[in-house]
Image (tube, rainbow over all chains, first blue to last red; front, side, top):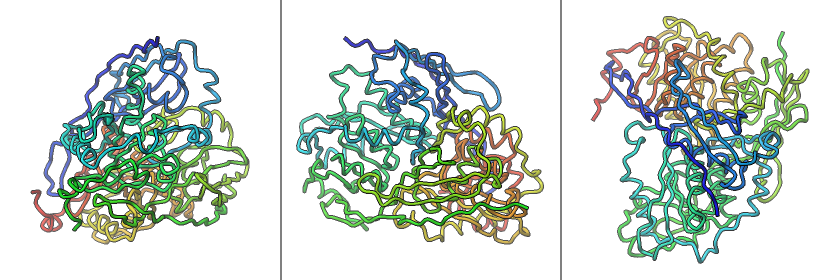
Length: 300
Length: 300
């Protein structure tokens, strides 16, 4: 039986109020998002500094270790302990994440040596290995994991109604995970929602959350991943690595995101706002509905 | 006398046309931006893979080496040669950048070991050292490097009128550099404009361009940096490292971007669209004008 790691629940303010001067010379009080350096130590060895909003730092670190493929199983982690520093000056609000493994990470030096600066908001991942691993990804057959047009609209509307740091302070990206393994027509359930100053952080946090679920619920095959950010190769690859076959974005797609999604049969939907969208790949997974289209507004 | 490096001018298509299915089930032909892996070799040693649009890969690599502080002077580089591969599958369009130094990069192993995943679109930079170096940055006095409100509007309007990949394909960030060392009231001159799938790439390309100018024109002190992206710590720090005291963005600012800008006396202006904006820091550098305000629209 799997023993899940112990995670702290470190909290810190997500926004700060500052004065700003507008075009009329008037001072306005505005809210801006936090951006905190979180330095990760694995078994007391410094690994990386992540710049984060700080909403769910333990899940971020867990997902980072997973998506960098430094840890193969959640069982390998004993605990993740985050402390936000009360330092001063530029280090005010900085944090430390102490990761304790059960038996160390083999070859951590070699595995962190090669770097890829990913597009969207990169992190030094290991691009060559990454491409090799794409071939190993197995998504469910096109006929098995699908959503209807109404379900897609439900996803977009659920996001629209969220109370968010974006609404209060702007300048953050959001990611969410939905359960779509429900009878067609039922609204997908939102399982996890997270915002961060970098969307690579937000998707890593989702990956960390998914790992913390019991194995029976931990599969991505019946899930849908939503992001406000662009569908770059990084976002598509990370979705695929979670086993999630459906990805929806408010933004567009890049050429390599498109190539990877096509190669894997991963359904990508972009420009999803109101009742508009564009499906770029694996359109077999999206069941169009005349009824839903009747409510869509023509393009003007 | 300084000898500038030899740079190739490798070109590759910046956009691709793909079919997409809209909400009415109709197939639409849309344009998406390229996203190419560009693997950088320094003196035949693999350093990093950058995911890029590919507009100006040589300047990107030069600016990356500069901003990672792997190279202290442009004189240290003999040449940067970029070839776009004609491979197949997922590696179609991938590129290789071969950097030849005049006398090697000392301690390159140690200097690329520590990683920071920056917010916006990060790259593994060296955060601790970076904070140390911020103290060393010297921007011109507040009274010396200023722009007027009319000049700010001119900058925003110049960007608005550009023919861009963003207009045709979306999903890219733009950065630009303007000369503001002109008599007050004169329109700042746009010196360099670049788009990329990651804004960290775009600002690195600007830094590379600035390094290629003759030393007399290579200072950032009389320049203004524009970005469509958010003013995260990374963007503010990179502007400061170029010596540029004025930064304008279409988007907002994060807490750490704000802290760094305040500490350095770097003027940050965000939410700059039409005639609206918010000045977050070093407002002494922005000369408000009743005449310009008369044309601004009230907030609704």
